[in-house]
Image (tube, rainbow, N blue to C red):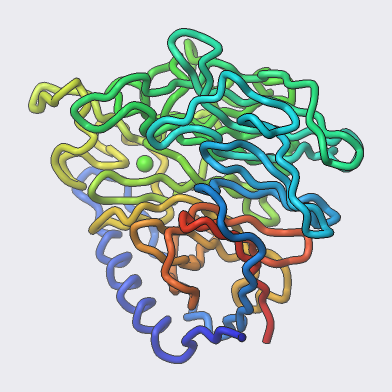
Length: 414
Ligand SMILES: [Ca+2]
């Protein structure tokens, strides 16, 4: 049954509140650069009518989705691995635990970690290459890594595993802030530039986000062989695979239609989930290590203080840090996936950014202006759920994975 989002009042109310918040945030402290105010765009009144179909159910912690051009739907389950739902509806387990076409004996499922992101090669139609983010025991200490697989012509087998990035930071043991496996990041995405973007997490470690060499709290940008992509612009002394740093736990990445600009979503601690537009060599401004005024358990201050004393974007320490396009400044609601909605069927939402929230149990649609400022937020009329993955399909529908074990197809219409 079609689900009709509220059109008349709710967006306007949210918009007005946001506009006031945003305008208030524009006042600069003495000595700071002044930003020219930009008039917010009018509230969107042409939202699509959505039809939701359950495509798969009974899954075990589905984590990510990728679709081939013919509609074959690839999905990961955190403790099982990679599978594909063929266009005839049958499902093949391709990679992961016993029962998969290709077994990964080194696969770790612990805490938040296991098998996370999946991305299809830009030339998938001809080379059938797939990339998966996973935690592995292949080295000591254990690491997160990105593996490249090649599928058979019928997409029912996987072979030729190559670990293209094998040294992404993993939280190997628990500490005062949580168990092993926390904050691995894990989303993958190919940009329109043909390079693979890899989102990583801070592992509850105070020094990792600003570290020039440890690949956590970063977005990496690599070739399909895992080599540093040209143009990463990492500062001197940094690992050349680093595209941006100073990030917390990046679990969403998408590329703005037209410009190709990458946007990421990060969980905040107990405040400030952030959506940020990335720039090569940029610093997201997250630095949760001890400082003269603050000493924290296990050297991690990520949960100390508030948005002022331990900000997700520390403009005092890093005046040139990337400003977020949107922040849940009051509270973290577990922001994870995000994707730009594309296609005229999305009506007024075409080109806008859908963001999934886990604790918040909803999907929001953000309007981001040309300067990267969010001018409107509306909540989508979908059931309450912990939204784990959002992916656009070749049919123009939005595909959704929930922690409840389902994958949905959400189709826009009038
Ligand atoms: Ca930030």
